[in-house]
Image 1: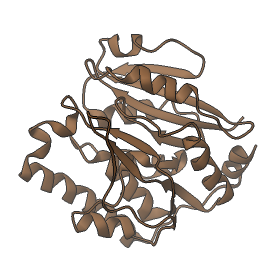
Image 2 (image 1 turned 30 degrees about the vertical axis):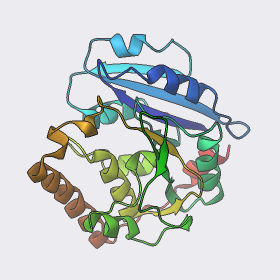
Image 3 (image 1 turned 180 degrees about the horizontal axis):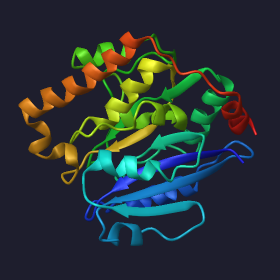
Image 4 (image 1 turned 60 degrees about the vertical axis):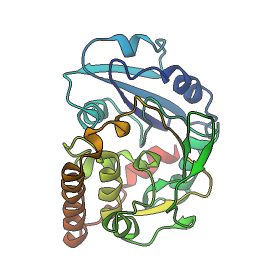
Length: 258
């Protein structure tokens, strides 16, 4: 049975909203024959964030030595069995019950596409929702469009709206070992080696709150921000320059279609 894996890193103390995410994923309506697998990976070994989610056959829980979100995602990737992979952070949500189905539909209908992204809605503490300022037009994305935006300092979409073929994520090496911007990095690496599609409807609700990593002073350190973005841009440019392109294998297409 074809599967879409949702991968979520979580740390002790960062699980305050995870019950909402669990309910959101449990109520996703997938295309006939598809199933969802939730890979929940603790960044650390306390076990407390994992215990806040009930055990179920569709949930895979794991823990490992603390090292940040990029490391936790990569550790969780080892347990991903789905042909498609979506990352959702522990404090975020999917906008509606058809979100994953829309991504599945795009990638099953377009077997030469490696990934799809979507608009993001920021959710503020007062309940207000606001779209991102740089959302591309829906449809096929021009090669390098997202990288060009990143180089201008105007990253067009949130990296956590990405649904990609799991093989593509593995082929580009997963998430780089940087303290932030790793979610945008994997998107830019996928763009460098395969074609992508922009959805029309939102694919993520990004919760704004005081406890989130992107609200910390360390996240906004100017020198580190420039360095981590340059690391990602340099690698994405090198991948583009290599001319190497992902091509689907016959058995991959069969796994998704079956």
